[in-house]
Amino acid sequence: MASELPARSGRPPVSARGARTRVALVKAAREVFERDGFLDARITDITATAGVAAGSFYTYFKSKEDVFAAVMDEVNEEMLHPRLREFADRDDPISVIEATNRSYLAAYRRNAGLMALMEQVAQIDDHFRRMRLRRVRAFTERNAQAIAQLQQRGMADPGLDPQIAAQALSAMVGRMAYFRYVQGFGNASIDTLTGTLTRLWAGALGIPPSKPRR
Image 1: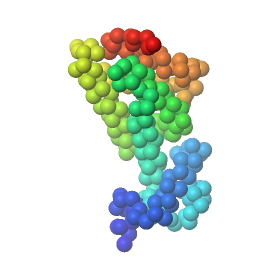
Image 2: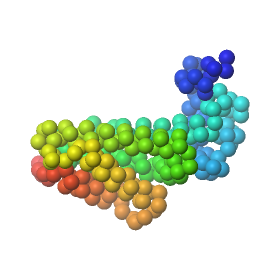
Image 3: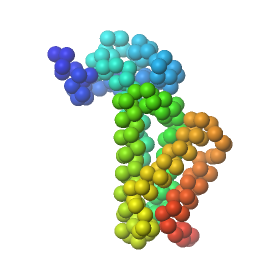
Image 4: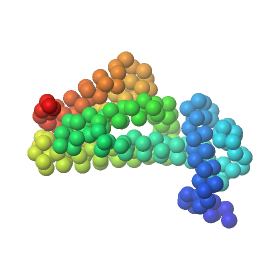
């Protein structure tokens, strides 16, 4: 039944072959969107790049907007959940902030083409505007929780509102990444950007400088 198709039910494919086909379509869609932009991207180009029949697209996605949302879901997951534990010392909050900023900037640079498209599409489509706002809220909430934990441990200014501080600092990092990697403004390296943004974060939160390591 049509209502049981992944495109209609919202559930993932039940077969391994179906899962592979969906993965191939999302990967191909990313390639086509990055190459042609959102408005000029065509579903036939996506299916041709994926190497599947044109009709197969509608088994997994309702529309071009639907597959673009799937692409951006993957990007958001990558950027929101960086793998930090192996190189961030949680007893040193500045090292955690530095690792998080570096991971975010590196992911933004890798996905700059799609981030630019998201900015554009969010201006003309309410669905993607809401998606973008959900992403902003997710980043803000994660950072607000981290700030509150630092305050509880006596490692950050207790007079700050964690939510507002998180909004301001997250916006700073996000716009810097946008101007550097989408607009091509300036030529700062990722090391310079990471170091500067981390110092601004630490200063704004009132975190004392890290002690030199032996």
